[in-house]
Length: 165
Image (tube, rainbow, N blue to C red; front, top):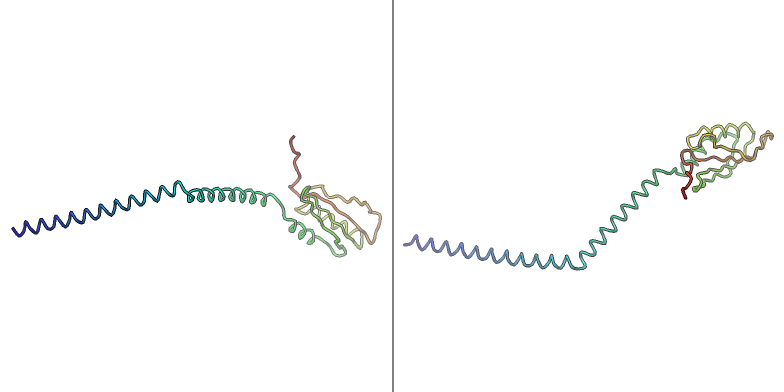
């Protein structure tokens, strides 16, 4: 008889624990459903959607910037390269890079014509000047000393393609 009472007590205890667990899970499920309904229809989802859209737009802009960066040559690198080619006796007054036409214009002064010709030869052989694009519009080659010059060249690999109508 004592065994039956102990067994009934254990069954009652198990039923009470099972009921408490079932009640707890039911309350949790209801709260979760309410929270999900609020999130799906409210401000929270709109903010998340806007954030996702902003991130996608930023990624698109970054991809285009990265592509543009790999397709251009830095003006600083060109000027540094030109400065490294300047021989003794040649002085640069102005170096300009036109980003629209990819043309570099260099104005300067050379003590001797041969120094300017050496500089022009070094420029035309450099990696930045497009083949046969170096021009000397002054054509003041008869003057032997105190030679003022202007050299113009197109940046190698960046000739503009004609636009289609």
